Each structure stands twice: as C-alpha cells, then as structure tokens.
Length: 244
Image 1 (cartoon, rainbow, N blue to C red):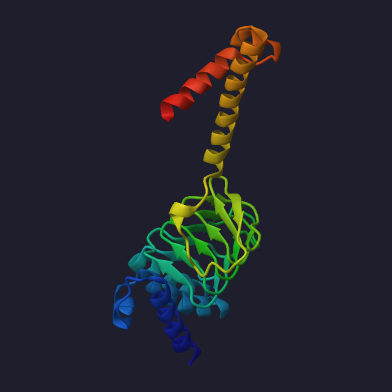
Image 2 (image 1 turned 60 degrees about the horizontal axis):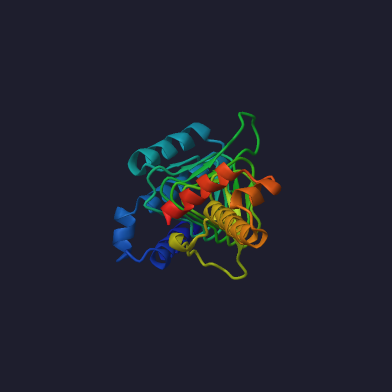
C-alpha cells in the first residue's frame, strides 16, 4: 500500500537526519513533524478529491496537535523532514520536492491576495534553517542551503547558500550537501563587506601618513588634497580600533 510505504520512507528519513532518533516507536509517538506530514497525506488526498472542508478540518486537527500548519493544497514530495516543527507554516500553493529538511519557525508564505500560484517551489535536497521565511511565487533550486532567519524573496539557483535579510547568495556549492546545514560555517556577507570597507579606510589613513612624511605636510593636508572627509575617516578608524 502506497500510504504505508511512504510512512516507512518518512521514518527512515528521520533516522538519517536526526541523530536523536532512537526507535521507530519514538518517531511515531513523539515527533510532531512526522505527525504533521502524516496528517497532511490524508488532508491532501481529500483535497484532491475536492472534499475541501473535510480536508481543512483534518489539517486543523493536525495543527492543533503539532503546532505545524500545512495547507491541504500544498504538494509535498518524499522523505520530507520537519525537525522540531513548532511554528512552521506551509501555504496552499507551496510545492516541496524530495528529501527536503526544514526546521522550526519556517514559513513558506505568499505575497499576494490574488488566486493562483503564490507560494514558493522548493526543489529536491533543500535545507531550510530555523525561522527562515521563503515568500512569494519563487523557486528554490536543488541542493540549496538557507540560513536561519533568512528572508528569501527571489529565485535561488541550484547548489547555493543563502543568508541574510533579504536573502543573499553567498556561495555556490559544487557538491550535493545531503541535508547538512552548518550554521556556524555560513558566511556573513554584510559583516565581510563592512570589514573590507574598514580595512580600506585604515589603509587610506596609513597611506596619508606616509605621503605626509614624504612631502613634509600634515596628514590632514594630504587628505584635503584628495577631497577626503577627515572627520569621517577619524570617526570610522576610531570605531574600528575600539571594536578590535
């Protein structure tokens, strides 16, 4: 029976991706993510049969017991894992591929009140970190990692890592990530940009001192020749030195 086969496949996925899983019985009884996807299998089947009200009632029962809201119209692939799960919301026209993992607080939401496709499409082997928001009719490519609390509003190509608000693509992966999301290793694009900017300002300050010595002028006179705001440079340099 396909339903039972899918259930078994889901259980195996939890064993593969959650080191805390100890037994089949533990997953069946104690894992709200597993409960939510099982409720969804039933509600989605009813939705396809156009028993919309009954489907919504089943999904609301699942939400009540798990704290996870999955609209019965959402299309979900095989081996979908919701880790912890509290606060997860998946909208009506969302589509999720195979072997996707999401953590608690994730939203796959819409950005319009118009009918039709308005929620994201998540491809295979995607990992979505805690609290991330994927909004609108966008596509997340295969083997993508989305960092915790990122807000993604544009398409993301395959084999990418996305972090920040709004989400920025910071790396292109050349290999299958296989569900791994090491948050401590994710790049900080804004922090890196600020660091580079400050390093350039420090370089300007040091170079101005060197030129002042060569030309027997003050640093301020050298900076003035190049239309550099001395006060701003001093404030930024002071801030950088204090933070380090």
